Image 1: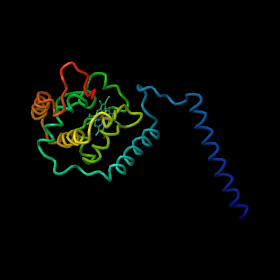
Image 2 (image 1 turned 180 degrees about the vertical axis):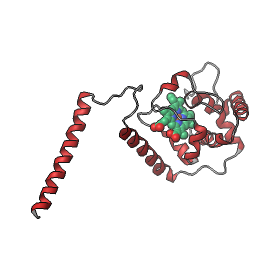
Image 3 (image 1 turned 30 degrees about the horizontal axis):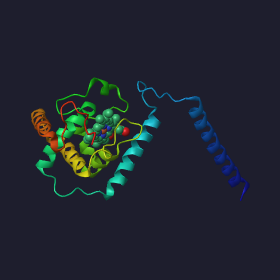
Image 4 (image 1 turned 45 degrees about the vertical axis):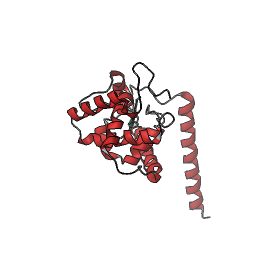
Length: 190
Ligand code: HEC
């Protein structure tokens, strides 16, 4: 190895050590503001969002919906959406719960977000949730068929107006969305 190459190698190793030491110092001193009232440092925000997007895209690759998406699936997903998602994500013409407005990350309005994700990706996100974000995993409490119904409903949201949304979610709740929510009972204790 030439002396020049050796200097480059030593410099690179020194830089890596410095980065590792800085990282460890931040962890041990609590040196990154974790308050939800504080915006992420742009680099941390970019790293988290990009990791999430790339992970979901890769993980959802092997999934296939159980056949054609039918209006019955969308109708069945509507009641589930109203009961388990709308307080965080809002609906069409229906805003999030007051407390959800100060979450970080803010649960995105799904009518727009659904255009960025395929139905397989929505299924994966609902089934597995997203660590360190507040997006819960519904897989442990809901079967795949129910989650495909919810994903079908989410993917149909961009084409709905407030009237369609209200009608579908009201009907879904009356029928129990194919998965009953008895009044007053904890949702999905099954
Ligand atoms: C307690 C609040 C909460 C509930 C309840 C919730 N979510 Fe989320 N959801 C989030 C948060 C926060 C994110 C943002 C995650 C991120 O960006 O890292 C998210 C992200 C998502 C995404 C990805 C959107 C994007 O572009 O980032 C989808 C799709 C989604 N949720 C669907 C659902 C569905 C469907 C339900 C109901 C079955 C649901 N969520 C229930 C909080 C919630």
